[in-house]
Image 1 (tube, one colour):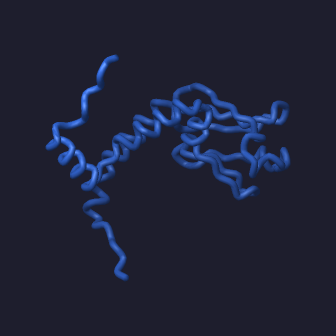
Image 2 (tube, rainbow, N blue to C red):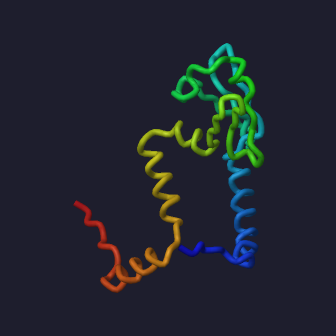
Length: 143
């Protein structure tokens, strides 16, 4: 089976959009600039790129709930602030995932739908054209 290789020119063309997206996420506070384990409260505290802080109980992460305080205190922020890493525990946590976990079910579904709605593919474009040919989405009726 032949491997598909993306041409370098295509990769280079994607870089400006990726940098712009990263800048937007940085300004929105979706990236960590520092993290520490607070032994007294049993929480990991992250300072985010917009100046706010987010803390979560380590007990909410079942795989890490029984780790020693010494191991937990060795938390590192991954380059770019996208994740937290514990070398000794061989554990990584996504900053956006941690922030998403603090939302309620309705808010999570809304955010996931917003992200999915941005997805572009030939199949999605074809389905949209086919739906448009049928008159588009039916209007909601008020009762």
